Image 1 (cartoon, helix red, strand yellow):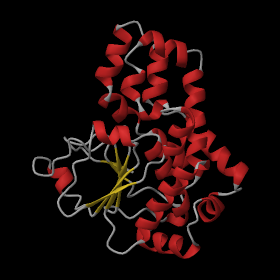
Image 2 (cartoon, rainbow, N blue to C red):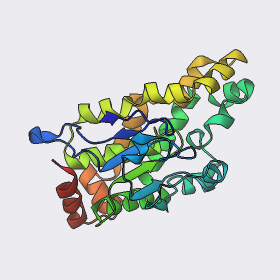
Image 3 (spheres, one colour):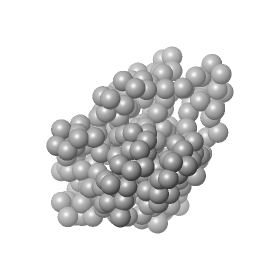
Image 4 (tube, rainbow, N blue to C red):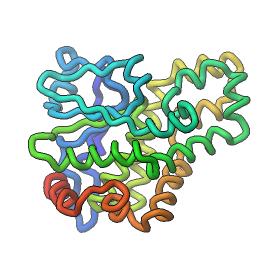
Length: 264
């Protein structure tokens, strides 16, 4: 996976060049992941202009989109696929959807997220990304678009580009033939960019007496989060291919087209 040094998009990465089985790789320049796009500006950011985006898929909630609406490149279409809609309905906004709010009050953060509760809540969110109807619909849309004519180059994103986006990348790379070690390495590789993007938030939280471990649990990703989603896939469907076919409702023909397009 290639980090792209954009100035107006945080945590922008090309899934291209990720190693796959049989000595193959992901074809570069077709699938990108990122954080929110509220500052995206191809006119002043050559790295963004060079992407030539045709499709942008926004995995965020209504509230996130209202607070920081996407800026869309000329010629690109915007699709909304709220992966956490059902989770919001069931239990209020999870931490993954309200990072700034969660770290605004160290006392409340300690009360609700201290003592390992942050990690447990994120693990619950990752399990929901596999099991809830809204998440299944969101990731079905992503895979269907990747296989569609004239949809790529495609960029998918959430707020930080690490959780909803991280699971999306995991599904894609696993389908394409990346092994477990590669998938986990790519999942964790976003941590430096995410922490840099949210450094002022983390520093302000800690300066007010907040626990740095809570901040890092909320802002970063750890193997435990990804393992929770993969365990949910195994428990419900057995394999990633069955999760895609049975859980997401994506037919084998669509997966075949996606592989033909994205594997170099």
